[in-house]
Length: 595
Ligand code: ASP
Picture 1: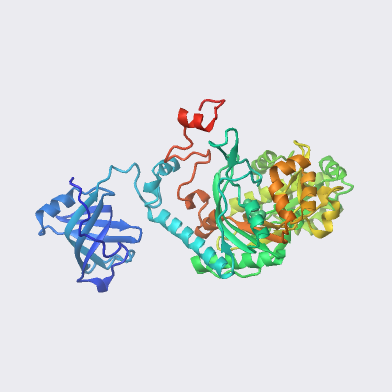
Picture 2: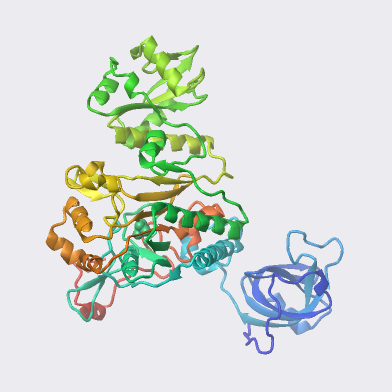
């Protein structure tokens, strides 16, 4: 087929634009051949671009050469056509198409490019495998569904930018080639050619730079920033993600909450026209864990954990008594109406619990106001009555128990609660439950490393009343640290920061850093604090997750134009790839492992 330049066929309209009143005008459209139908010599083509689809028609009585070329058009050919807009004959109007009242009778066409047979059909819903879609991402992104996702992403980012600018924040870019910035993952490293043996790190977030911008007096900053983390392989993680990174000086936690609530509300309003009530409810970390077994609770449904520890102090059931004696907890979940479950149904849940570290999953069924089956024989009448009352259990319910170290009980029952949510659709899809989780512990003890680690990052300010315990009892120090949660998904994390060298050095000591290490890694930050650092705090909502929730997608992969597989591969361009010998020589590196 002869390919032609567009020449004077300059596009006058998009494929989503023409309506009935346009009938009679001459237009030029350009786009992709979506579908072709031949009806008794009449040739119909659905011409598609990102704005929509328009039916174009080649009439048999028209130009023979034109008809001949049109007959050779294949799927996804790129063409430009000039023709007249006509009202579609009665009975052929397509109400599902915005342009469905009209068609364009083609008088002239240029074939701008042809197309190999696509490796998969561009249809909705897509049937091709994920790998094939990623390999031919440019074709996958041609689908209206994918185009809508990326356009929604654009609108969300614009809404965020507009809102933050209106609030007086200014956008400042920070380096991609950076000093290591700890956010709990490994850094991607870039070897320096000019400085043999030295490396830059790609930023895990702009954390330290945005704090230093506060020292510079840019008291209200934001940046839609790419964050690069070499994380373990997990289904819904990407090595690159995007944050709406925010930092402000002279603020309290309440100020950060109010700004973020306005941001989220304005994104939902602008993109979906949906009103979100503010302020959002708040829950402390301790309450979230105790009630939902999670620091990002899905509060769209009940099924909260019931604490039974104080009721069972004198139980004869060894599993419970030993957990309680060693300082742990006994809690239960009420699976409403599951009292008729078979042994094997319960066993399946026990398997799940074991997979999450439980030793087993004790249960009882409620009938006639008493317990039956499972561990019922180990519980006295008084204990039974007290449990039923506290758990608000009724006949026909199934009670599932967790007894262990408290954190383990929370983890197992919290995950089991979500398994019930997914199995029985307990969370209404149309609810948007936003909440703040506050007062996180500053440190978590890592048994393996036998050391304290920062729960969020080590630049978080402890609560004023807890600073006194930093050296003596780090486990009891709570931070001015908060997460924003939407329907069980962590949407943002942030904190009020340390702005004083002495407190920062103290926190570094807790996480086992020697003064030399602290100087080597963060000397620049500590020095900045010496030069009049104002109190400041911030937050970083995740743009990918926001767009995922706005669009109802299950994975952040679908809302990123060119994502990696969960193994970190880019199937379209084949990265990571093996560098040429000369490149390695120039960078002064050798690999100890062949690919
Ligand atoms: N830098 C933090 C993160 O990436 C967010 C923050 O504390 O502002 O999680």
